[in-house]
Image 1 (cartoon, rainbow, N blue to C red):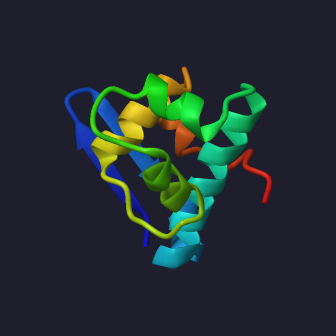
Image 2: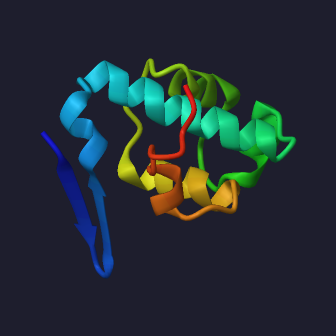
Length: 97
């Protein structure tokens, strides 16, 4: 089933979710975060330093490995730290597995 998240003027739809279960989705999100982080030359420590709020490398590791379900707000904070839009972070069309 696809989902749509709407907040103010932001609307995100995950069409690819129709073929994914929860664990596959979490792993895909985590892999996308990891790929973006590495492509920008950042370590997990660097990423944590760019995120406002209470988060550590253990949290990032769990998110990147798909072992935790981050909130939409956490994904927003991560996208800001990676200097990408939330839409780009959740766009799996170009995500290589």
